[in-house]
Image 1 (cartoon, rainbow, N blue to C red):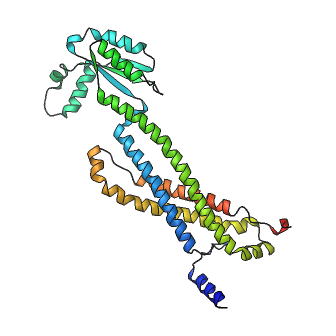
Image 2 (image 1 turned 45 degrees about the vertical axis):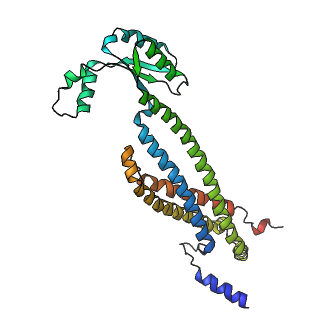
Length: 298
């Protein structure tokens, strides 16, 4: 008797949401709160991974979709420009080779000087001849070494910083694939957590569900409140993860400024809500997949 009284008081402290059409979401209790917290932390981890990747891509630069490097030839070796251009054009893994003309070099110098009243034309005359090399994608593993060898053989110089950025872009490509792998694994784990939580609620309300089925309620009518709860739980976890993401962005603002990047927290808002809804709905579908119809019971 005392146990029943305690259970009744516990149920009274739970809140449930009524929906139009006679549906009622299951009571929202301790199990759901724990599941929400765990899923929120997992979504926050996914958000941090993608924010880090976002910052890395900004640092490498927008040129990564069409990678270009430059080879420079001093004025004293200007006669080597054509021979070097021809050798680079014959290499495997190179899409295009062109010599940057003087007008383009002068325009670049004017932009670099920032309109400070200096004569960009006179400065640009002292710039080395520049050969722009566009690399093919996917990039050959030896193409950078081949460019360096050709430059050394024909009195040219390469931009080492550009080469390092190309290599950083390759690393980011690998990290991008790993980020998707981690997202999928964490997503499945989150769906499993939601599924187990809702399964426990289903077991606790087995008599109620069975009574509804005996009274003629369709299976989709019984399942829908639990599926909606899973979606609601996932969306709520996504929102919590998005809120928890902002302190990290604010605390690293000085570091971002030093690297010339800006992490976009608002960009993650809808992906986190949508991701939470997907994993919550998937977990709920799995949890309610075994609701047995009275007509099929033996």
